[in-house]
Image (cartoon, rainbow over all chains, first blue to last red; front, side, top):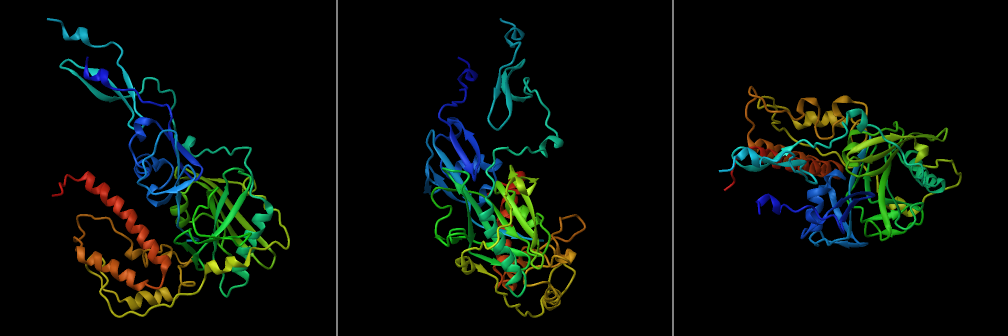
Amino acid sequence: MSFFDQIRTADTSSPVTLLLNEESITLNSDQFRGKTVSQLFGEYGSALGDVTRINRFVLNGEIVAGDVVVRAGETVRGAVSSESKGSV
Amino acid sequence: MTAITEEIQEVPTILRTSSDGCFEIYNGVWGSYLRPCFDPEANVEITEDHLIKFELNENIHRIPAELWAKWVKLCFYFVDKVESSVEVSIRILRSEEDPSQYRFLVPLQKVSGASVRANNFDQAVDIETGEEITQYPPTGWIPVGSSHSHNTMSAFFSSIDDKYELDDPGIHLVVGSIDTKNMKYAIAASVVGNHRRFEVNYDTLVDATAIPDMSFNDKVLEYVDYSVAPIPVYGKYNFPKNGTTTQTKTDIYQKWDNLKSWGWSDTDGDYTDPFYWNDEYKGTSSSEDEPKLKLWTVVDTLKDYANQNANDPNRLNLLKDELNDFLIDLDVLMEKSDIVLV
C-alpha cells in the first residue's frame, strides 16, 4: 500500500463550534482532537476576531479556563473583556 | 521493467484541506509527492467589490425603544450635567433563549472628552435595573456588540473604534452630535464581521423612537469616572529622534497642555494619534540612511512614556495594547528571519 493511500479524509461528524459573540466557525474532529480551548481559538479563531483579546471562554454555558480539552459536539464561546473607544 | 510513464495517473487526486488549500498527489517521472494545486472545481472569483457588500437579515430583532432611550439619556447626561462633555460606553448583550431580549451593561470605565477605557467588563452595571455584574458575560446572555457616545462631536467610527471593534464581531453604534438645547442627536450604526465593518441605517438595528421620561438607573453613575488626571511636570530630557534631535519634555507638555481635556484633541491634526506627540515622533520604518537605533534608547523612551502617563490609565492601556500587538509583529519578523534561537 502506498504511503499516500494512508491519507485519511477529514471526519466531519460531531464537529466543534467556536463562537466569538454570535459569529461561529465549525471544526472537524481532525482539527479539534486533543486540543484545548485556547489552542483551538489560537489556531482557527482568527477569522472571527482578534483571539489575543479573548479572555473569557464559555463551554456549554459554563465559564472555563483555556486549558480545558474540547470534545466532539461541544460549543465554545469566547468573549473579549476590555475595550477602548474614542472620537480620534 | 515497467515504464514509469504508465504509472502516472491521468486524473490526479485532489486533497482539500480546511485551511491550507488544495493538494494533489503528483506522480512525477522520478517519484510521487504532494504539491499544492489549483482547485479544478473552483467556480467563482471573489473581488474587492464582492467583499464590501453586506445584506442585512430581514428578521433582526431591533433594540427596543425603551432600552435605547435610557442609553441616550445617559449620553445626554454626560454632555449636559458634567463640567466638560465626556464620552461613555456600554456593552450590548442579548438573551441566549430569546434574541429579542436585549440588555445594556455599563462597564467600569474611565472617560474623557474624546476617549473611553474599560479595563475589565467583570465590573459592570445594568443600565435598566442597576444590577451589578461581577462576571462577564452574565449567565444566559451573549455579548453582541457595543455603543459609545462621541458627545457633541459627530457620530462616526474613529480609528480607535476600529482598532477595538473590528475584532469584536456584532453590532456597534456611535451616538454623536448631541444637542442638549434642541434634544437632537445622531447615530452611526454598523455590523462587524470578519474584521470588517458594514455600515447600515441605524433604524434597521434600533428603534430610536423618542420616549420622554425614560432614565437610566442612578447606580450607573458610580461606574463612569470622568475625573481629570493631573498633568505631571517633567524636567529636561534628551528625546531621541533619529539620534539627532534634542527636545525637552517641558516643551512637549506645553503643547499637550493646549489639548482638550486630558485625552487628546479632536481638532488638532498633530495630536490625533494618542501614541505619539506629533508627526515628528511617529514611528519610522528603518532605511539605510537612518542611523541604527540603540535598544536602550527604545527601552528608555517606553519607560519614560509610561512614567509621563502614570496618572492616565487610558494612555497606559493603549500603550500596553500596542506593545501586545507589537509582540505579534515581532514573532512574525522572527519567523521570517533565519535566526536560530539557542
